[in-house]
Image (cartoon, rainbow over all chains, first blue to last red):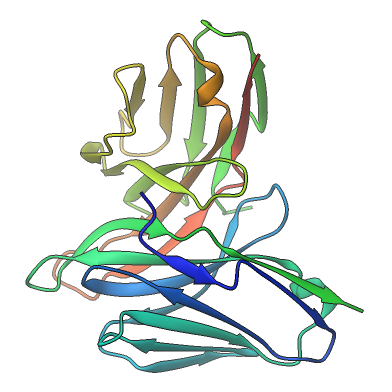
Length: 116
Length: 118
């Protein structure tokens, strides 16, 4: 079963606008990762945020993590048509000691469409 | 190219046939994962290896599925007596796990093998 739930399921914006996607999860995590998938292709790793981090930046990407609410958000600033893709959050669950189990549990994804 | 590679990229088979997929991970990565993705869904974990040891198998992995990583390098995923419900994208990923050090948890995915069972 999918642990992560992304919101919204689909997002349509104009080039230059910002896109925000949210992810909620249910169990304790070691880290949370965001991936992008272009139609029918493999997944591309975007960014990883560890459970003891609250915010992380990479280029036009900003990820936040709130472990008390078991939620994360991905912000893409100044979007481009090339950002059109599906975006998935994936959680790497941990045991009581915080050690990663290693496997990822993905949400259903947000389909982002950026219109030129 | 030093990324994860998968072969074949597409496979069409008839129900009841056996199929085998291959994954070649990034050479220095000791962990290798298999996931399955159906249309409109996120990938679902199937199994993973650390070196040649299979550490975990999902309940999704029925008796018809078997995975191996005999020398700790490439891996194969075999599906016996395929069913139409096996139609999906099969994704392989690899990562580097450093015991005692700071593990690198990012998983790097291959392009996938799309299986269609007719």
